[in-house]
Amino acid sequence: MYTGYQPTSCVTPAKATVFNTIRLNENLTERYPQDVVEYIFLHERGHAARSRINLVWFLLGTTLTFLAAGVSVGFVVVFGLFAATNPIPQVIGLLVLSLCLSTVFSWLFCRVKFKEELRAERYALNQLGEDEFRRRSETYEEIVDRSRYDRLKRRLFYPSVDTVILEREDG
Ligand SMILES: [Zn+2]
Image 1: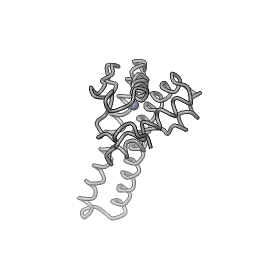
Image 2: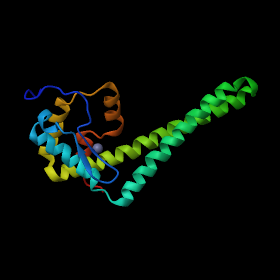
Image 3: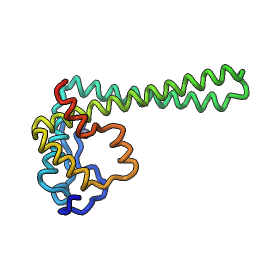
Image 4: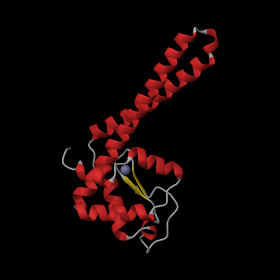
């Protein structure tokens, strides 16, 4: 356990904007040690260093898959409500279809987010080298205190340190 810092409440420490600029939380340097702040900054710079094309693909990809997943879930609700007025096999077929579609689109949404986070982490890895990257991201994980929702997001959208190092070569 890292002892120098108290666990901090989960306010996003930093964020890259769609304009490829970086917003850092103002008390970031009070909450995290300098080397961890640098790691966080490099991660965000990894996002901000993306090309315009990558940014467009990311925005389109997340928006479209999110909408498509939402529409598919809407289908489930609508056909559930009208189940009484339709033949049962047809209702079940449509239900299965919309469940499959919403699963596929949710999965694609996660993949698009995951790819983007992987790219940002890879950037930090290339700047820091493997040992420092591992040490700093592990220190960060020890200090940061996430809400349940943020832990879920972390699990869905973020690669592990080992994945980042394994996939460092391609791309
Ligand atoms: Zn990120």
